Length: 92
Image 1: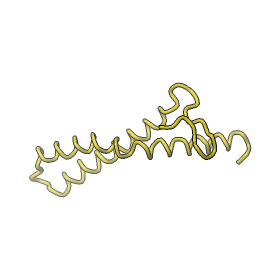
Image 2 (image 1 turned 135 degrees about the vertical axis):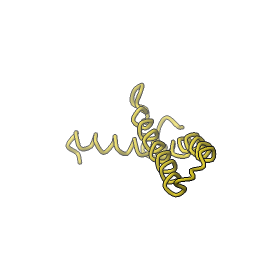
Image 3 (image 1 turned 60 degrees about the horizontal axis):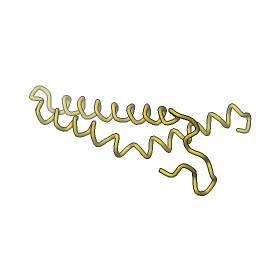
Image 4 (image 1 turned 45 degrees about the vertical axis):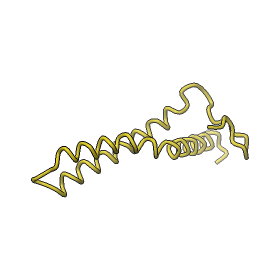
């Protein structure tokens, strides 16, 4: 990732730990995907739940989802931070 936006020169990482919010968003989305896959499969296949297949699918979802969502969670975090900063500065 580049340290600054090539268009507006916005410095992305303001301080150490800045991306913790992005990580929280990423973990939250991953948890939603996990529970949707787990509960959805259980409801769709009850009472004969394929536990082995369910385990494989949910573990795969827990590995793949954070990798896919990572750039989007960072973008969302920067947008949320900029929005809150503009509201607190009174320039909104």
